[in-house]
Length: 228
Image (cartoon, rainbow, N blue to C red; front, side, top):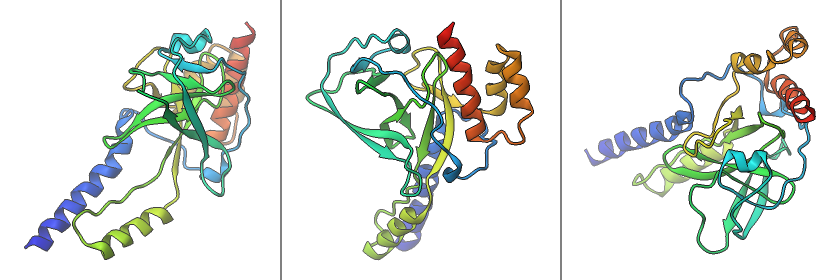
């Protein structure tokens, strides 16, 4: 009976673990089925002042208002994909509250709360401008508490063998600390490109609207906005 209860708890926890990844914006659907290996670094970002941003507006004006000390360790998506998608961030002393993002003096990382158990992830903005975007990396995690060392070791090995799931997310143009990003669906991308009919027409004529294609046109869009 105790084994049956443990099995039920394991299934429940496993379901919650995977479900937690979809909590950023459940109203969107990722229509991109390409693999992480197809994501390439095709854009640049201008240097920003080092510091902590409290709001989206501070990012846009390049004026971090918090002088907190921190160390940042960039992380690539996977061994097969060297693109830097996020970073481990450690603050010296007490971590500031309600952080929108940080800058290491070159790149900007936005703070995203992922799931119920995984918080304070910092994802690199892959593009500068008013409509930046990130590659949100979600590593499948299987935890099997109370089922013995053998089962736990098997679950951990299974998790390690699963490839990371990568989605393209757009950053909101306001300071929503709980949901600062939303999925870059095909319709969302086209709604932005409407500002430039030639970009929209070229995008619609593309044979594929995968992550790389969306990123390319979003980068072109932001470059035009910056030069205005």
